[in-house]
Each structure stands twice: as C-alpha cells, then as structure tokens.
Length: 111
Image (cartoon, rainbow, N blue to C red; front, side):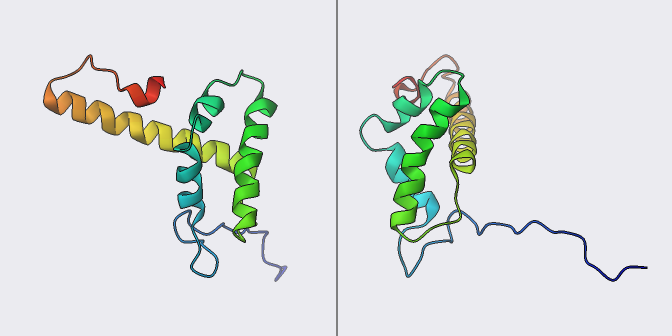
C-alpha cells in the first residue's frame, strides 16, 4: 500500500480575488479590456481558428502580467470571456422576458 498522494491539480485563485499588492484582479483587468474601444468586437469577430482568438487573449495575459498576475493563460482567459458572455446573455434574456420585451436585441452584443 503506497502512502504517496495522488496528483492534485493546483487551483488558481478566484478571478476577483487575485490582485497583487492591492492592484486590480484578473476579473477587473479583463472587464477593463473588454470595455475598451473595440476589443470585445475583435475577440468576437475572430474565425473558428483557435489560434486567432488565443492571440488576442495573449494581450490580456500581458496586461495581467504587468500587474503581477502570472497564473492566467490565454486559453483560460478565452474561456472566461465565453462565460461572461453567456452570463450576460442569460441576464439580458431574463430582464427582457420580465419586461415583456422578448424580441429586443441589446446593441452591446451586436457591437
């Protein structure tokens, strides 16, 4: 019987709690990037070639590294943007349904 512990993947800290020395968190940096100029549109308009989208996410990795956050990677950032978009769409659909505006399309999503 072996006493060795099975490999456990280290979990990254939460996106909103990983700021270094009271600096911005990964989430704050990502939201700032998304809301600046046409960054979201550039990310959203990429083709289905995964490297194209990951190259854009590397910009965010660099911004995070400039703030001392070194544990985020382009693939995880891409996934996080997809999660944020899904959450936004779900909330928008809920509000539209609650208001009776089921056919309304938000201009933020269309760009």
